[in-house]
Image 1: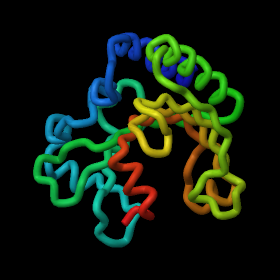
Image 2 (image 1 turned 90 degrees about the vertical axis):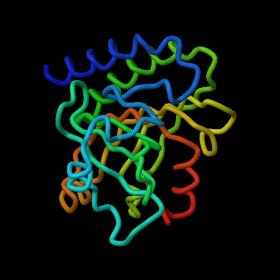
Image 3 (image 1 turned 120 degrees about the vertical axis):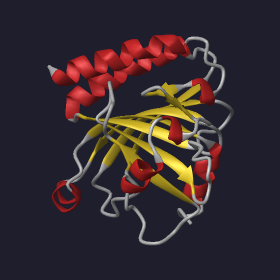
Image 4 (image 1 turned 180 degrees about the vertical axis):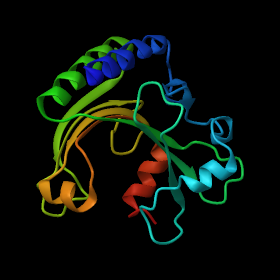
Length: 195
């Protein structure tokens, strides 16, 4: 029941996006790309919530926010290293849900996005998750592109991620429904190997 309510809240919270013309107008938990994260967290909170995805300093880093959220269980915020303004470069919200329930809720959100963004190109894909070298972790994605290419241009993406049993056991990561506002800036960083 909690998952159903969370997804309903998510869908209804998207109603205000009907006039969105660019990715910076899209909000996740009230945050938008281009905002300063300092509007939502202080410097101490930011530093205490850096996600340790990397063992060294990279061009960008990721902060996890789990408090004061209304729709998602966690929001991941991408920031540029040494940027004293803490400008949000990309963000994504996550809800723990898997299997057919995730697919069903993703379809509901996709239907809403199709109504909100009728002029955007959209693509669907079933992929092996790049993190899992065994190719047993899967992602079902729908991508709404502000441009021509989901691999180069800003986009909004919904995805259901189903981790392999090995990843769940080793990393403790649950299956999830994700909504991501991804910028071309971060896409280039990812393509560079997260350097």
